[in-house]
Image (tube, rainbow, N blue to C red; front, side, top):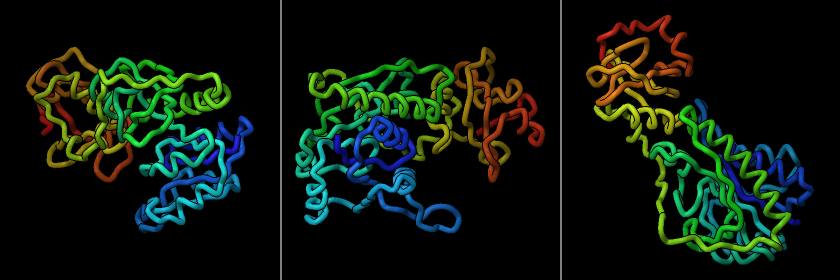
Amino acid sequence: MKIVFMGSPEFSVPVLNELIAAGHEIACVYCQPPRPAGRGKKDRPTPVQARAEELGLLVRHPLNFKDPADVADFATLDADVAVVVAYGLLLPQALLDAPKRGCLNIHASLLPRWRGAAPIHRAILEGDDETGVCIMQMEAGLDTGPVLLRLETDIDSADTTATLHDRLSEIGAAAIVDALFALDTLTPEPQPEDGVTYAKKIDKAEAKIDWSQSAQIVDRQIRGLSPFPGAWATYNGERIKFHMSKLSPLSGQAGEVVGDFTIACGEGAVEILTAQRTGKRAMPVAEILKGLDLPKGSKFE
């Protein structure tokens, strides 16, 4: 098929690769514009733009589609279908109607659960047992369109947003190839009204750990916010981020160190497996403990 691809972050790159590997023609790639990043604050292209340019594909990155010329340019591509995955802009109806077969979205949840911006984070934070990918026929509402194909995957107790992100990206890439191959035979299923939840964007204010919460909640917070923004607490005035943890059978006062980097919560405790000191990279706790005095009975705030 002749496809317009619309995506921006790393999550979208495997999808672009798989579409090309499957023999589809990419008429154009749309992504978010380059933005200042890094210490030098130089404009940095999105991962999708970088990959598209490596492949020699036409790239466009309008700020929005309020300019009629941008809408007209999209229509002149005469695409069979648009594939949209984590693009970052809402599409006006004129764009949704332009491709012959409409616009298909790859959404990283089992719709109607976790419509919106941060479905992977929210699934872990809320303790969901499973999630997945839906191939959805796009319409004007936020992730409200009928579902053509859905694939499930379990959420393991060792999953972080990073590991689940990578797994769902690969699942989504395979799913869209399958969906395009079988597009004439798939039946769009309207989403039920029952079970709708919204995955609001992650706020950095959610990252501060409250040790009075149960160990289950703290563990999900650590894994659900890893690697970004990173759940954190302070120790002797230093902010330390936690990137991986597991539940511990130990107990104590909330915030108390009760073992080798094991911290008591309001109920139970969490054992920290990977952490990051201020100004340092994330590393296993065995390496961190070589330079951090963490005696039993000391406290995290």
